[in-house]
Length: 328
Image 1 (spheres, rainbow, N blue to C red):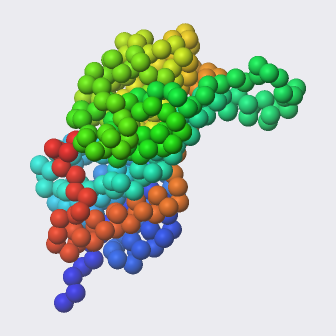
Image 2 (image 1 turned 60 degrees about the vertical axis):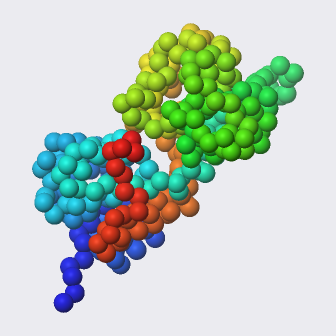
Image 3 (image 1 turned 45 degrees about the vertical axis):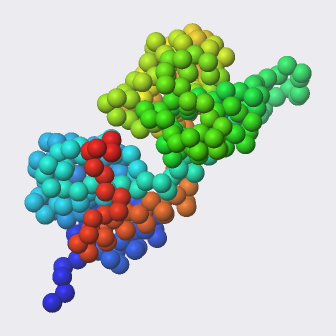
């Protein structure tokens, strides 16, 4: 007798190819329209589904997990970051959690370099003048930015994405430095020609560009705070394509407004979709709506990983991208 297909609830719209394949394999409830689920809607999904497919916009805490149905056995997260999920409580309740690591590495690294170039070369200011029709023609001292080649780049977090950023930075002639909770292997350091700093304070004080590429954990919350921003050179810039919570956004705003640092490029924010209006008003800040991994290829590959994790679980095996508390 054929077994019942797993009941799967997807909390947001995914690429059409991903949704179609999910429909072919499982008993899937898709999200339409593409709006963020309310807490009550998430709870209803968790009470009825065998598998939940959430994403970064879905905050799932211990109280919600306590109300989940007994049949919920897998949370197959659409995304690599899992700081919006209470992994420890899920494991205690016998709910496995998987994610989609690796597939967004190259895309996020591309966006990191794009932000570095955009901030240093003052591209938004040039675009604003052209789009407003105010350009009066070329002038020797107009829109002078900074040369990328030769600058020191300090990477905070030398994981997959940090290393991909380092490779690109080397191609632009930047000098790569990094701080990580563990030093990378000697052969990786040699390949990237990277200098390791055990002290984040010492690295921050010497860099021309800081790139935040570490995950958000309790240990990295406000790792870039007011004190460390004051250590940075006045000519330095900072970019963040990781998680907004790693930077104290109010302190960053004050540092930018006072001229303590020269500029910033942010793809993520401390309050997620709520952006500090004082940041938006600054000409030396580039703000993007969390576009770091937003490529057609990347989003489809993320969906493929979700499908593999669910299918492997359905076949009675451990999902290949299982998240465990010790990894965080």
